[in-house]
Length: 117
Image (cartoon, rainbow, N blue to C red):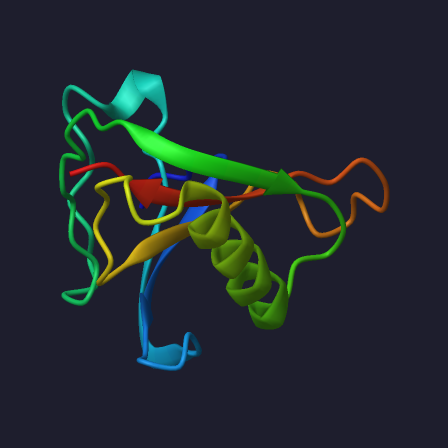
């Protein structure tokens, strides 16, 4: 019953298949606003879970526009290529992040994150 408004980024955990495409399994994460973090309201929907995301080191790339799945897949492939085989990061998932409301037409920011192991 508490409205918290929209937060940024909206973070989608993507699980790539062998060919780099995304499996139909995703996890969407929203940041709880600062004033609610010490005592977040309990979700009324059982499918919504509150979890604490630990600090992490990431490898990241940024791009603009209205991001679609194919954009995240392509930028993840570019980031993987740029990192080469020496960088140690989780290969079984990556994070797709959007920072802008749908009505913002210009200067949009999207990122792909690989989490360092």
